[in-house]
Length: 360
Ligand code: XIL
Image (cartoon, rainbow, N blue to C red):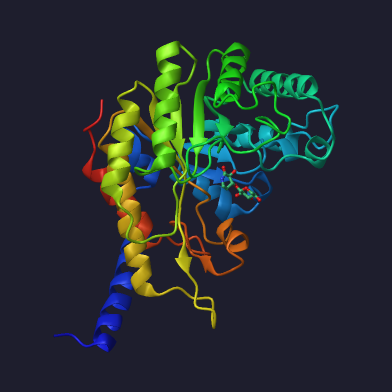
């Protein structure tokens, strides 16, 4: 029987060996994913492209990028009368230069909106006009450049009911109290604006089987039955549990793709608790984290309709988890702060490599 001290030492040794193996020998993620039919992506911040290690890693590893914030209302619509496309355009330019797809994020959300929008007393008619104009202008500007849009983000609460939002009921665009009718309106405007783009509903905490994912499923089924244009569901996957039920995620992907829509894993990260004394993570947790990454990739690859796996950033140097958790959690991404691949990266590579040629 191994004592706790030897156990810890063995784990440390395994982490070092795994990290070294990854750093030297494996093909990049995008190459490992090449024959699987799945895009591998990351959220990016264009202000960081000037950091060589940052942009080199993105270009080498990923076939898909999504602006973490650069296409959101609070960046593009700093004022009401104009659109500022500069940051979003930088992401598109980077992607074109490196043969990558771009996902657009996001057109309708109750967060990350400018104050002029949320703190003024617009009427329903004015808000409806503003949203229609926003969806149309954004999608036309990025037509044939953004291949898939998160049209609506996080519209539902944990019980599956529509959340309060300027677009739904405060005062809303004209469908307050009518369930997902405002979501439907946004998708209809989106299809009109750019018939080439894939239209996604993106959601948090509806990855496995629960009331929220049941509500997403019911909404998508209803939209499909009535011909409301929707092409996919984005499952965010901000994971904080290391005992994640990946079988439930697989079952959810199965039922969604059976409706004829695609699934993208859109914001994968697996945050770890930080030791308050020194900000470090337990090495054992890095291995458990790798297992979660492996499980998510596995769940996606088992379903031909799951067509993209994207992480929310890629290096622990730049991740939203730190500020979001008030520095209590971190180390959520596949590369460490020095851009060295972690066991999570190796797990993704291995799972992708094992699936070569298994998808159409
Ligand atoms: C986060 C970004 O990572 C942060 O930079 C920003 O300050 C707030 O938004 N779900 C989403 C993303 O759909 O847009 C959020 O991104 C994370 C949660």
